[in-house]
Length: 186
Image 1 (cartoon, one colour):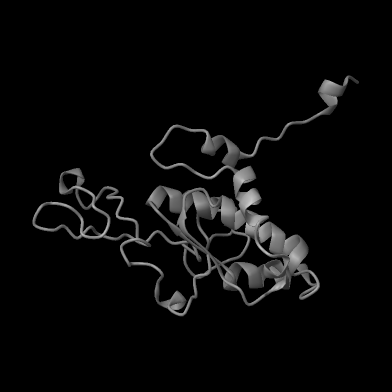
Image 2 (cartoon, helix red, strand yellow; image 1 turned 135 degrees about the horizontal axis):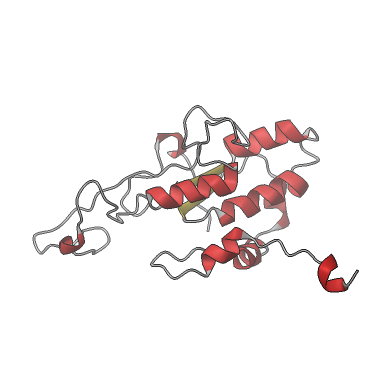
């Protein structure tokens, strides 16, 4: 058999998404991993840390963090794979979808299902968003028609039933109450 036929290329869908033309630019998996490589080794062994992607578009950062924690960093802390996985997904991994669609994509990437409470989710949550919700926020316009928070012009508003791109994390609608005590280390 020729070497070409022996090799199987399995493309990473997140690599493909990162190359699409859009206003939202998902981080390519290689760049996400390069950035995570910059963190100190001890963060991967600490089961008490919480990881938040405040502007999740594809879920790539959360996916790569889960892989590092699940298959390397926390193996000694909890040798039982199922218990370790349960702890990581329920207590350590959080995201905020910047739009309804990116929330769905991120959940699909991290939980293997857009419905975190569904039968195909790697961990079954009580609600479909799991720890990666899309939290709708609203712009707060000043008298000159610009958002006081992000500066977006009021004439870009498209109605309540469409995306308004008032990102929840920027507009102080996230983190939600369960993450009030989160400390942000950058």
